[in-house]
Amino acid sequence: MNKKFLTLAGRIREEISEIKLIIDRTQGGWERARQSGDEFYLDSVALNLHSFYTALERVYELIAITVDQVKPQGENWHQELLRQMATEIELVRPAVISRETRNSLDEYRGFRHVVRNVYSLNLSATKIEPLVKKLPNLFNNIQNELEDFLYFLETHDKSRKNFS
Image (cartoon, rainbow, N blue to C red; front, side, top):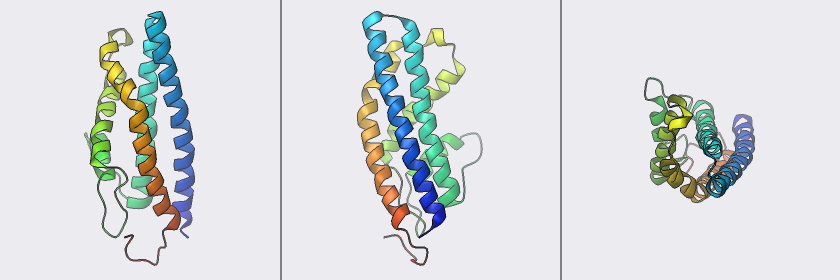
């Protein structure tokens, strides 16, 4: 057993638990925003969508550093990290996420950029709504993909030359 991989698996499981809480908070904030019309709840939803993507990106960075031993650099490193996670690296690891998941996550990455660079009073409920509605199914897919990857980490034997 590879201790680094087992440690990473533990960290990923902890992050998944945190992400579940973020999703619950997002859904709760969205319901309150819809029921009350209070825009302060919309701010909360935007912040939680930001946190959702940031937490996943942290997981993917840990994988890039620990398993791939290379993290993308440069101006577009956030996009490149998603691309890296959707790519199988022969003799190193399977793809962590599917291309479909990568494409969906790119929307959340873009929204996170908006949250960081736009005043909250300019946030739009019509732009946030599709992200909130897709969130549960997207996370279900991500969680399944991460479970497959966790299986790889937990059963990986360094003496094997291939993970297939």
